[in-house]
Image 1 (spheres, one colour):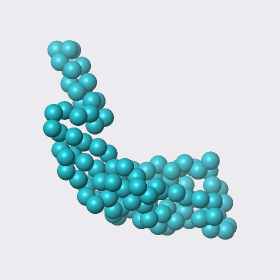
Image 2: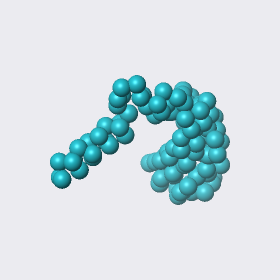
Image 3: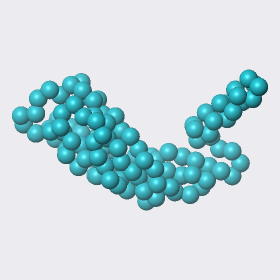
Image 4: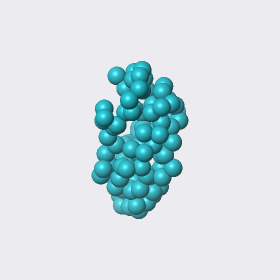
Length: 112
């Protein structure tokens, strides 16, 4: 029984890491135009730049970013900047069973 559970865990972890089994091939989205937030993008007067922001968005079958929003933030003044920067990114779409698919992504952004 324990061997069967361990085998299932191993197969699950291999599948999650996008290994190729037969004709089925999977791949995560690949950034073509990266998310880049630079110092000059931060408006004057924004202080307390230490914390974490979590952004959520979808990547469609063509690699476009859809419906970006900030799920968690330490400074609300940064939210619209992060959403605008996410809209400027571009990806190669995720592949599942050899076909492009829509996926939901979570992007943690850490300010130090």
